[in-house]
Length: 325
Image 1 (cartoon, one colour):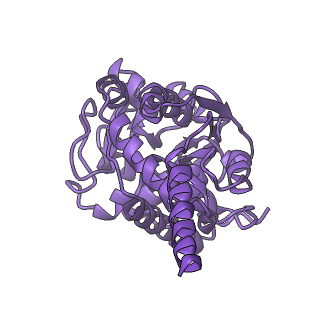
Image 2 (cartoon, rainbow, N blue to C red; image 1 turned 135 degrees about the horizontal axis):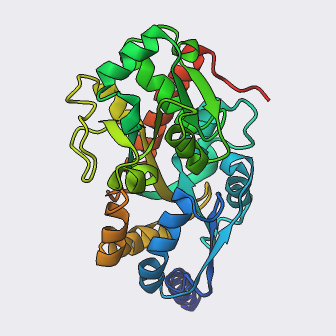
Image 3 (tube, helix red, strand yellow; image 1 turned 180 degrees about the vertical axis):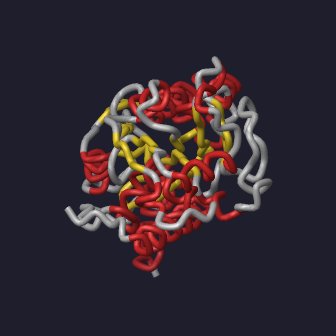
């Protein structure tokens, strides 16, 4: 009888210790990997939410730009980290939708990560210069069919390349890979500059990357890939133009850990992000850049990312855009 009671007491103490250990996370600073360089959309999103998120977490967040290989270097660093919640990733559409769809030799898959949320959506907008004479998607497609049109991107295999091709295909352009000339640049800023100086006719990129150019009249949006209008972008939506499939074509930012991230850690992140994304300064800053703050649960985030990946992969396979190297 005494042994039995001792066993029960021991079990209770063990449960108490386990509960206490779970409640102690986080005990120290958390490393937040940003898989792209300073000044880009991912970096801006991460550093804008860092203050309200840090207050919610109650421990320092160490922001670390681990750039390289189109976001793969930083992603692999988190993939290989211990799944204890002390190394987390600011995942992005490029790292976890475009790269898996486009690149045959990517050193990770979506299954190597556990997403705790997607919290920011960046509609894609297609834009031209006022001097181009193009005032609508109808005008653009007509010029593409005539020939001599070029589009810029942030590189081969980037969201910007995929976006332009997907838009042209949805608007009925035959063989969109050759109907318009692709002019890859070194980064999104350079892609916008290529349109500004006339090297390229148009580009399709995240609204956040275009917001400043649109606000000062340097670029004119002719399409946004959403069902609802985007503040600051006086352009028809994909739904209004009868192209609802383009709603899948959006940028996003989320937070992920290694695939073995424990449930209790994931639950804490969900709570912290619910608090951080309500911060007025964060929302105002991101919405001014054309972002839509939409907090997804882990299940919603995974379904959203998988759905987008499948759409992109189908397009890539259909058009033979897969990058083998």
